[in-house]
Length: 259
View: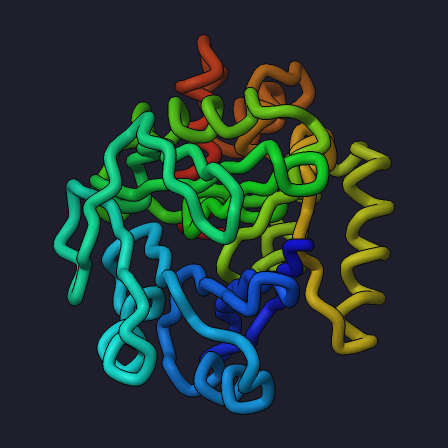
């Protein structure tokens, strides 16, 4: 049975570790630092690291690759459209990759970076999505290389996955994202309830992740640009009433950048 464990790294990163005790094998997603993974492996000597999965090229997602590969000889998988250090196998949009007995669909989701990918498996629980820095709980990644139109399309592609899908992003940004989301949609009761839940989780030292696509559709402003209340709030805050969902996203992203 597949287990997914968060390994905290840096100030707010999560390295996601996938393990199957029956197989005696494991994999990691976006190891920006090798140390947390090596510590976990030392505490679980029966487990062998077989795969290192990378969503995009930023150093806080790739910095641990070299040390992990040297220590374990794990295979490194990463997006074909980006320069990933130590990559053994390039991943293309639409490709299916087998890891720990599950098939993972590769999805090209540009916006944060030009070649960013996400990995989705519908055979794990009720669906699992590793989305890197594209989709966050109550937020989304900054546009470092892509356009607002690209990111909007990428988010819509992820949002179209089943509502039960568990969302594993790689930063603990939830509380700060919720502050912005409440400025955008202050009357959203689901959003207000979730803020209380997330705050309690953090006080207890627990991660707010994974989220779910059902939750994100209900509270994430970057997935809700079609809501009249959000469009009216954008008109008041940004001086422009968006004429489309994509335009609403662009205005929201610009507002968040200066929030």
